[in-house]
Amino acid sequence: DAPTYSALEIIDDDEAVGIVVPPALPPSSTSLRDYVDHSETLKKLVELGVNLWKIEQRPNVGSMLMRLNFDTDVAPKLLFLKDIGVDGSRFGYIITRNPFLLTENLENLQARVNYLKSKNFSGDTVASMVSRAPYLLNFSVKRLDNRLCFFQNQLSLSASNTRNVVARLPRLLCGSLEPIKENLKVCEIEFGFKKNEIQHIVTAVPKVLTANKKKLTQIFDYLHNTMKVPHHLIAKFPQVLNSKYLRIRERHLFLEYLGKAQYDPALPTYISLDRLVSLPDESFCTDVASATVKDFYLFQKTL
Image 1 (cartoon, one colour):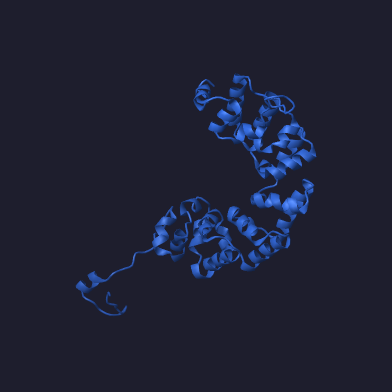
Image 2: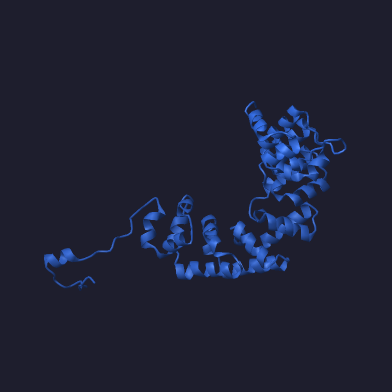
């Protein structure tokens, strides 16, 4: 151990040279990594799997973390997450995307969990929702209630179906409602779906609500105007709206080239949209197109 000296003690030059001075905090830095060795909080967050590089891209978040005490500010939030059923392996992901959770009041966090359970979300479902939508518990009970009411009323869903939609895509409770309202308008006014068809589409594929409008329009336009698939069949297989446009186009053109692009269930050699997009290339070629994968890949090169 290095000897200790009084501030008033006179020491010689040899003793002065031997004094060990602990490294000081960097006076300024653009990276939190420079502070990890000096901060127990940052060190333990890194051990949890928190990505400091992603966090420091956001204004003032780095300085916020530097002010937190691990034992009094961070540990209680981690214990809370564990108590509601969130797996420890998700802590790094959650904090990386929502470091502000560490500044929330524990009573408020518990009140929000209690509210969701009062709406018949199971404990496991709440834990899963928090794991996949880290900002969920940052919002007040009033906001959560308003969001649930919006989806139930806007889509005329039952309470059970509303829970199902939100549980499968919990970020619906976190983001802006404007893109969702826009997509609902697009489906009804631009695409021409009936309200009951939109209800079925959203219940089956909640991601349609948050899909990129341009991509959604491109896929619908190709299905309806190029492939001539009617609305009721698209609504029957709504997963197609969540597929890749390129996959739909390549497979349709291949079937058209083979003379097998038949999507009317009333006619022979009918091919459902589900089989068109969901099967892997090998199964699509052998079971749907009656061709080889090699033939399909060669055809793709001509596009």
